[in-house]
Image (cartoon, rainbow, N blue to C red):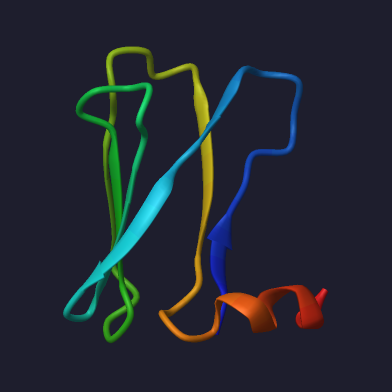
Length: 75
């Protein structure tokens, strides 16, 4: 299972780190204090807490532990 979101434009973008907490995948930006995107795997609910600059696009991927090496096989 690979979950990702990305920004497809010339607008400045940052790559987020990700982790799983229960049913939530949490993306956070190391360059934007306060930015966080949460995706609930069970309900599909997505919530975003914007960082200081709402015009910076964010993208990231989540690969579950143990499947890191299989991601490249899927592409």
